[in-house]
Every structure is written in structure tokens, then in C-alpha cells.
Image 1 (cartoon, rainbow, N blue to C red):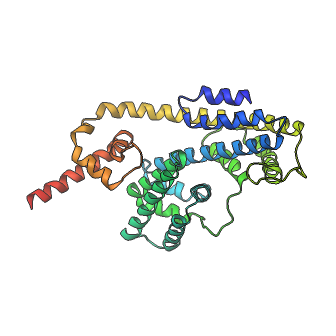
Image 2: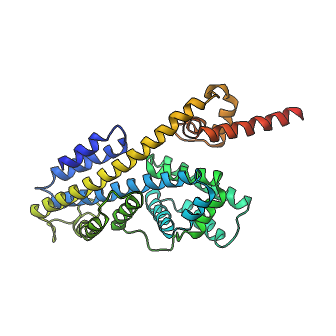
Image 3: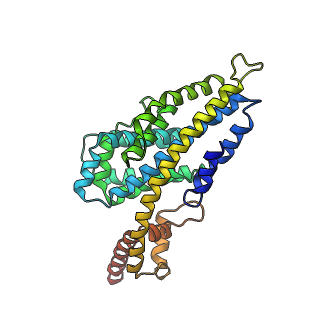
Length: 338
């Protein structure tokens, strides 16, 4: 799987999160002869893991971009059935990965209470609190990748475009009672999202490969040594020729999919960089000039680790920082007058 490793290493500077998969690739290579079913299980893990990372990366970018669009375009996107499915899929994956029943009990009740009704401020505060709690739970579990970025993007959209987010919820088919998202559906959803973002993938050809992905997942369920544990001697096991074939299929599919994602996201990041450069020239307020306001934000939105909410807001969303700073200063002025 050298070509897949080389592709990941080549793009490490822009996408360091994908380095996580290199040890799994090496484990797959190392076990081809002596433990072919471990190799097959690693291949399945690579397909599912990389697919999830792509899903959350593209969805968090989409959610973040909503607040920057004209309202007519937001409305059009919110009413798109494909968007509802993608949003529901992301929540379904989070349900399994975060694995916190308290959070998902709360979020389902909140979703149900908002169906077919116009939200009030209490509803808005409730949903905002739930997503803040989800961020906290995810970080406590050591999740610091695209899943958390997706939740942060949702929480920010609640603040910026309340109506849009509630329409997204109301149109979403998410339910804890629905059939869980199957593992093979993760690859299918990642491909769908990539195709929605550009004409890079040969979508019909990749869709035809979905049957192979399903079969790899079945092999893992029936013969996998790690996830399920097997008695020895095994009644059903794969041979080296099958493991080699699955390695070649996995490497080829993921190399093509990741290359398409890297090209797509690099183009997006380049456009964002141009916008950021223009904005940096307009920045007047210094971050260190408003320590009291920064402390206020950090206390209101505490984050685990070294990351400060105020610093993240200032760096990533300067205009929002400036607006909230002005509101804070106005409120302080009123209090001082009293």
C-alpha cells in the first residue's frame, strides 16, 4: 500500500489528520501472509475511517458556509433533500462514535419538540446548550478531529443563523429509533458528498465499486480477528491471495478518493486564503487589547486543552469577534452609566 502512504505523506502539511491511518496501513501490510483476516479487517477500517473524515470535513465546511450566504441561497440549500440526508448521516455517525446516550437522548427530544413548530428563544438556547455539551463530551473522549469541527460549526450556525439551523433540523430525518447507518454506507456517503462538491470523481464507476466495499465489510464481520475475537483453530479464514486482492482494491479506491478530496479541499483552502489575506489588511483591533472581553468569552465557552474560544473566534471569524466585542462594550457602557 505504498502509493496510498505516499499520497498521505505528500499532503501531510495541509491534512495532518490523515497521518493517523499510516499505522493501520502498515499493520495491513505486515499481516498479509500470517494473519490475512487481520489485513482484511485493517482494510475495512481504512475505508470506514477515511470515509468518515471526508464526510465531516465537507459537512463542517458546508455548515460554516451557510451563515455567509445570502438568505435566499440558504433557503434553497436547507430545502435540499440531499442536505437532509447528509446531516442525518453525520449525526448517526456521531451517535456511534461519541457513544453518549445522555447527549443523544437530549438531542432527539429537542429535535422532536421542534418538528413542525416555529422555535422560540428557549428552544434556541436549549439546542445551543446541547451542542455545547456535545463538543465537551467529544473532547473529553479525546475526539479532536473533524467530528468536533462539525459540532462547532453547528453551534456557530445556531448563533448566526437560527432560522436556517432550525429549518435544517425540522427537515432532517434524524432519529435514534431509525436503523443505524451501516458501515458500508459511510463510503457511499463520502463519495456522494465529494460528487456534490465538484466534477472530480468518476461517480458512476466509483458507485459500481460499492459492492466490493460491502463484501470487504462482510468478510470483516464473518472472519475478523480483532473486533469480534475468534476461537482457534478458526472454522472460516481467508488465505493470502484473498488478502492481497483486498489490499489492492482498498489501496486503489482510497488513493483515488483521497486524491479527489485533496484536490477539492486544496482549491477551497486556496480561495479562503485569498479572502483571509484581504481581511487581515482590514483588521484594526488587536486581540491583546481586549483582555476583559476575551476572558468573558472564554468563561462562557470553555474548551478543553490549550485552545481558547476567544482566540479561535478572533483568528477564524474576526468579523463575528468584532461584532460581539462591540455588543460587549455597549453593554458595559450602559452598566457604567447606571
